[in-house]
Length: 241
Image 1 (cartoon, rainbow, N blue to C red):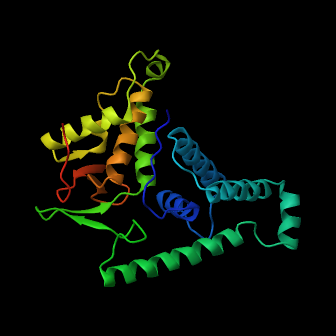
Image 2 (image 1 turned 60 degrees about the vertical axis):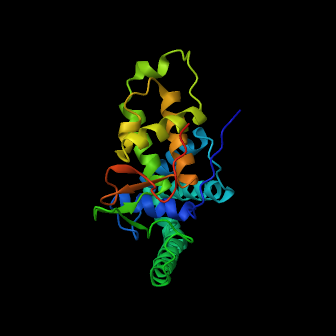
């Protein structure tokens, strides 16, 4: 039986594109469409592999990016003719991104004034521990980036092993709760340290998403795109049998 996780967040295809533009440190007015399209499709493939609910708008954007990429890859002479007859194929997408970015920034300012940091967007949130340490809340895309790194670091022969043990998400949720009782703040990478294979890594990742959904944990970074730390949510009582 598949285990689907639905996060209560407002992060659509434009959020993902803005994230990739920021992550790659590129100019929003001159998007390297080939690079961004490839990374966007990689994220979608990971989301499919994790059995996450992917809204249709993500797939529409994927088709749009592929269409723009095909125009940008035309031979120089054809591309020159196209640009004489039409605007840069990226123009409409850039306009949408800038409009959305401004809207999102305005919404975050309003949320700060109203004290409703989690009502709609996740990127505005700041977490402060009792010790005074401050963190930025990590997004779903930050988590997927971290998962990509973990999967890349796993030796190829580990992926080829025949899996005898089944790792369920429920079991991993229980294991993580036990770990967080012992150590309330951990690096996300620590959770994957003893994973035996790809299935265990993915089960652990889905368990993290489930604990976020249940508000049992917070995932945060001391700086944007930094190492992700998993923090036990003291406001919610951890249930460990």
